Length: 86
Image 1: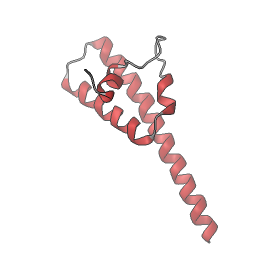
Image 2: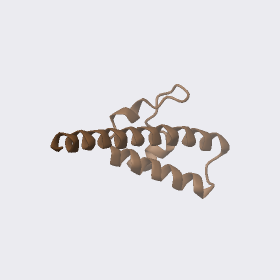
Image 3: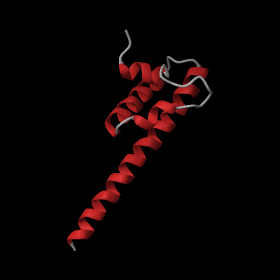
Image 4: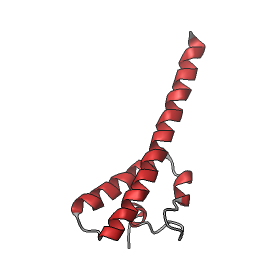
């Protein structure tokens, strides 16, 4: 049985539509980061076919954008909290 990271790297939780990553929006930062790391590991292994590699790459891009959004939001919250002290 595949792990959550393996299922995510395989795109098992994806919507049927090409390029759809509907399941990413509910992920927390750490889970998205871990799924992204699993995708990178798979791609670096050279195992996936070209089609699978492209699908994994697209999901990785979506996960990276999601992680960046989390980090940007965290930075804004920290800036707001520290600005209130000044």
